[in-house]
Length: 202
Image (cartoon, rainbow, N blue to C red; front, top):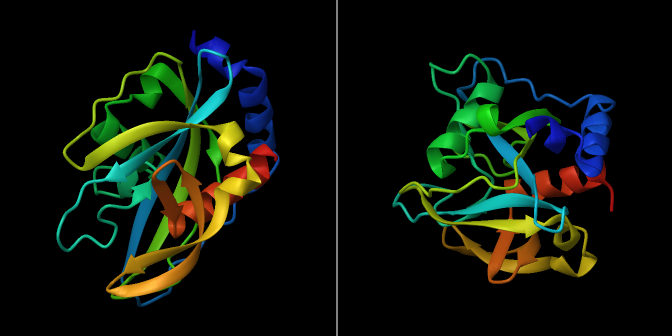
């Protein structure tokens, strides 16, 4: 069944596009404390055989700069992680109980991203693209307030990409955003999805 997912026409095309496009890495600044993290753009075919990607809404935690944000599954690299790919898959499992290694495969990697507004330390995030079987079940961890699948057709809809007003660190900002129902995606996740859209094609 995993082989069938990888042979899905759009997944196969995306895998080839990722392989032909070298991802751009961000080098850590010497002498600065750097936090490395990874996220997963997780795809699955739905009952119509069309692709959807998984987004989560992070639970509210005091002191967490990404508290309550809509994001991709992922988090910081831990000493037990042999690679950033391992970080992405571990965090995906911990947050959603989806085992990519068992139920799918990693297709490739996108360009590293880093927050434009830096505070204490540099953060470098590496996005991985993966595909899983249609029937995977999500079990949300306490870190996740909601998890939901977004059709790629919605991502490709230009009307879903707007300028939104958000509040960050007590300030009101107007930022580029992707909207899906009640959810507003902005910041690093918006930039990652925009890069992904450029690879998957509009």
